[in-house]
Amino acid sequence: MSGIKMNQMHKFLFKVYVISALMMSVAGSSKAQYINIIPYPSQVALLKGNCVLYNSQLFTNNKELSVLLQYFNEEIGLQEKNNDKPKQVIDLKIVPSSEVYGSYVLVTFEKRVAITAPDSSGLFNGLITLLQLYKSANRVNNKLVLPHLVIHDQPRFAWRGYMLDESRHFFGKQIVKELLDWMAFYKLNRFHWHLTDSHGWRVEIKKYPLLTTVGGKGNFTDSMASPAYYTQEEIHEIVEYAKARFITVIPEIDMPGHATAANRAYPTFSGGDAPGYPAFTLDPANEETYAYLTGILEEIRSLFPSGIIHIGGDEVAFGIAAWEKNPGVAKLMAANQMTDLNQVEHYFLRRIGDSVLKFSNYLMCWDEAVSAGLPVGNTYISWWRQNKPESLNEAISKGYKVVLCPRLPLYLDFVQDSTHRSGRKWDKKYNSYLDIYHFPENSIAADLSNKTNILGLQGNLWTETVISKKRLQYLVFPRMASLAEAGWVASSAKDDSHFNTRLKAHLLFYDEKNIYYYNPFHPDQHPEPVDVNGH
Ligand code: TNX
Image (cartoon, rainbow, N blue to C red; front, side):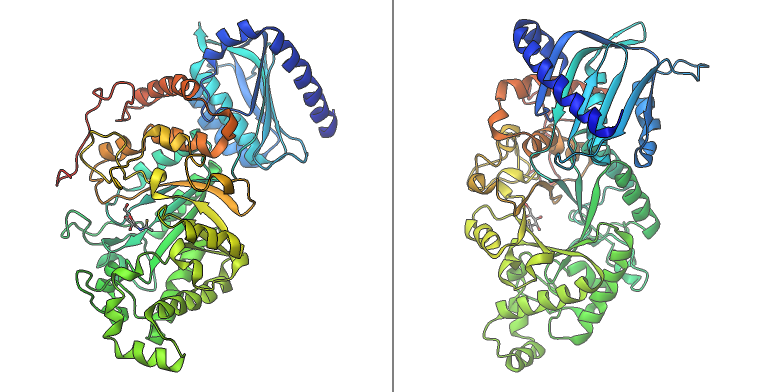
């Protein structure tokens, strides 16, 4: 059957199924308990009967998915030993259509499953839905009983991101891989990796080895901790691991502020000391600073095929007073008719931006950079300051593409319950799993969310207070599930009680993997792990 016909057939079947599903709504609602999918698909039509699988094997015409087959088959464990001829097939097929990137159609038949999509990311998403169905299915003598259904699904936002700060505390590749597994499980597809900041430089740069041997030393709670960082080989391994799960990795090299660790390694490029913020910035007036940073960013580009490099640009104000005392800065300002330091900051960003865009497709910056004059067509803005709606509006009106990651409710270093002691709050406000679930409707971005400038959303885990894997898990779970649902479903489809039901099933998945999560239904189940300072 040709691809187009197949697609038409699915559309036709879907209509029939919706009608029959409506006619059997009672049976449908009792069966709905099987369907513990997060994020919930756009349309689920339940049919009479079941799909029974006992010796199935994935089959695909898509090479990009073949890496996943082994993982999937292991996770499910349906293969009968010594039986290399499967009797049932799970068929994954690319079928060209005009549906949104990442969309798919999944049909469970009596003894087989078919997933079709216009692109491989859609097939992957369909496969993840199947994996979640499998995990909640009834198992009878090594047979899996799934509901008989048709799912039509598509994401609300293209960018469904999660950010990890490994500068303040370093977690290492095992923890990162586990996070990538969970991101994949939740159809999150952008991993923003904050690899440098004041407390440690975490990525090997061959041209400047002291960045890691000296700059990699210490962390937020222990300035004497031995150097911890990723070698280029390890970066490569993680990027590949992410790619196999349809996750794009975006590295961040934060500048010109948050640069203390880099300046420890190469003090000649430091912008000087400001009260409370020694060596926080890079020197914008030293020509060699630009050659140095360009060399670093070129190596970064070669490590990350995403072609997007995040250059930070946040909170430069903390350390900018140092520039007042820098005679080079005064000269630079005079030569370029600049009247304040903010213009120097923007000059720095534009120069780095020009260099980066010679070898990279896109730049990314925190929203302070929105007025720096960076090229609109190749710059993405991360809007994080929920108290600065004007910054979001400026980005949109100038035509920048924006990723929404406002502190409230998308910062995962914020506490998630009023009784929690460790982690941040903002005017006594904190980020519960339901606050995240209701984003962006509960924010000033609500009206903007249909604009094509909004690429999507992202949850950010800053790690000043994250001293252990246990605490990391506690902050991430179950809020990663809320984030996934916020990134995927239409606002009209949100329903707290439906989400809670599915989330309860997912808490059991966390138990299976020994995840130390916050249980919003039984907060005492896992006590809050506090950071060393207990704040
Ligand atoms: C602000 S968000 C920062 C980070 C901190 C975070 C703590 C951003 C661009 N800068 O450096 O870790 O707050 O919540």
